[in-house]
Length: 417
Image (tube, rainbow, N blue to C red; front, side, top):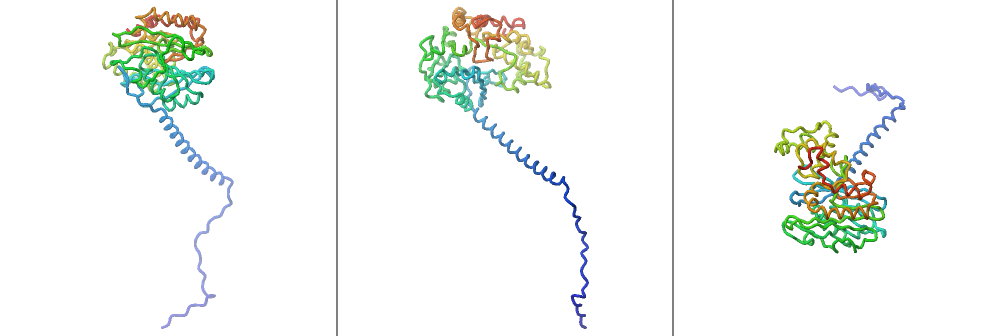
């Protein structure tokens, strides 16, 4: 049997599309806001990623400029070992700058202070550098930003923690003259400055310096100590145009606030009762410290810990081995030093008490000839502005500084005994 023939096209039944038609609505005014919001959010996320990457790159760049490797030091290695941040301050506009880095003793004791290099722009635009610091990339860039060729690199002391940087620093500025304090020494072998990479143009003297027209010099050179193995020599300078006195270690000005370059983390850890140094002090029962009360702060109060940490750090830096009671509760001993211009107790004990006459002759000459100075810039601790000290004039300040520093802290139980 045959299949029936297909009906003609006109007779076919049309197929019905049973899909539900989409509802078409008029665009709302908020639609473009949603689209724009999503676009802005996407752009913001991309921008934040770019900024974060840029910040990370900048941070890595800063860190690379701070690299400086140093594992030497006797009897304590000098820290930081691998990286040193440089803080720049313009003290006298267009004339005097300071560059500061952190410097401390090793063994993770958290004991640091600032070490300062001072730069003077001379009248001809060249630079005079006092007590150079580690010549990191960041440090060298800061000096280049000041502008002017480095004419003189001046090592004003015989002390190791300053001498260690003179050679590397001078190599960064090979055209500069290098002038060093006389009496340079090394221990246990007596080696010439050239062994440490220092190739001096000459030694510092009271007169005849190439900068005499602008910067005056007064030299303190004391007889050798410890069977000829240790010599203390320090030159003080007076920059006439800025009325500034420069010293190295002879005296310090102590303030309530720590130097900017000291990491806050180190201050908090030294101030906290469970910090490494305080825990070690108690574990070893250092000077009977195990049973003594501590400062009334905890890590829950980081600002309080930082304040206590700075007081402890200052006492450690100045006395090296203070009484445990003064470290655990440092307020009274620190108050005896704060706001004062004093000789560093460790310098007094090791050197100045043995040669008081020579030191006072030097101090009196500074007061007589430079008594109108506006500030004293040391290599450590804050700069001492004249208006910050009650005693009139630089002569009065130095005269007070050269007295026994332990007298200032005896009200707090003795800072170093």
